[in-house]
Length: 115
Image 1 (tube, one colour):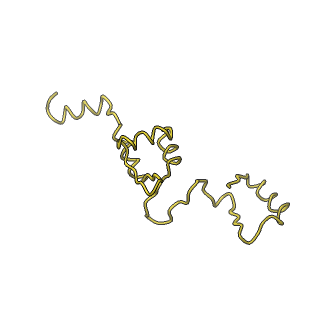
Image 2 (cartoon, rainbow, N blue to C red):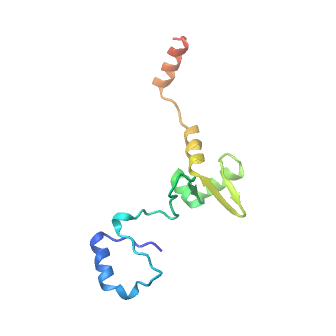
Image 3 (cartoon, rainbow, N blue to C red):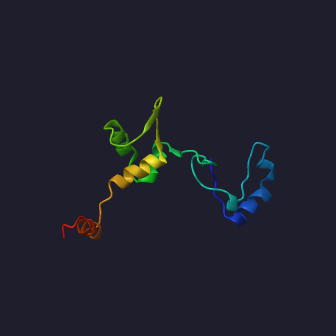
């Protein structure tokens, strides 16, 4: 469970609830934490998303992503019953749907000597 505090509320919580903090509890000051549902890689290791994280990242519904996986129109990794998505693969997949502007198309025609 993740609880989000303001810095002042965090200090007050620690003062009034010190009996709730056990040796297995890690308290991270608000200025030092990132709010994600899975741990961030600490080195250059690849970043994986589960289906919910991929849904949030691509702004696609979970069911839409399941359908795209079934149709094999989106890159994914399947481990057992679990679907995983590489962030770099999702970035490439999202960019494939990018439409060029009129200026970019015109510049390409000029470069090719067709205008």
